[in-house]
Length: 129
Length: 129
Length: 129
Image 1 (cartoon, rainbow over the protein chains, first blue to last red):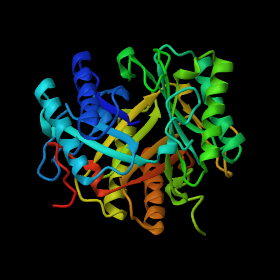
Image 2: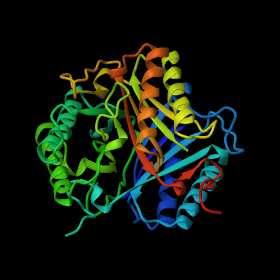
Image 3: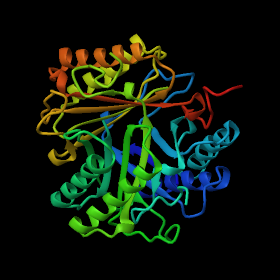
């Protein structure tokens, strides 16, 4: 049920986008109890002035034009520990497989309810029977 | 007050985008108690690798490159029954008028509060007086 | 910690995008208690049929193709008064510095928790120690 919106620079390669997409999906399944094949994502590529980050850095972190913004909407209720592992695995994977600096992996989560999802066919697959 | 973010494939026609846009708006008014003319939407068109779905399908549903992702942000409080009708009407309309498979209509809802909206002029139109 | 998604017409100038970006960031810092340099935004430029608004207007407001859609995700808990000031300052600034009609500045807020953010490095910077 999670949905990921991923924003990258315009010239991100098809291969890098695939690495990011797989990293987000794999972390969902590995640490956040998301079912296999529950993989719905939208990627947006951006011109240089369309991804804005603090040039001075923030919280001691520094960013480059490679910054990847990942916003995940899912069903609420996951623990702080699960969210921590989720963040860590995504950054680790994108760094290991895509060569992106871990500081350039930025993630935000939005909680919703089970009734807030239709996976197709006009049905509420996760709602009460 | 709802806001819909709609993601479609790059070569979606102006006519199909109009059908999807109208279907989402009409379902809001018909079943979700949204006022007439409360119609604010953003559409993004995407390259083939920018809309990601499980090629194996999910929950018995199968998807194609025509997949349409609809993410609606609105004021919370709507019942499960209303949400079910909302999902169904959107899928039915897009199928009937746009020829899209119902399995390729994917919807997610995000709840917010009445204070979270400014429709212009820097005012909080739905907030307490 | 806020994240702003900003949608503008395709031919919005680099200068206007910068004005909007700065207005949103400055209002966060000035009225919403956001730390300096906490500035993360994504801009999307759109074709004419990709930003949808009611041609009849809504709530007595009228819109043009210059409509700017600003969706802010941040940590919940801000008061109605703060949100009102936030809306007002953004519209005032974009009007004063970008020449955009205040009616064409549209804002929506989404609340999340402190645990829902990773600013990089795979860490949960705002979470419990």
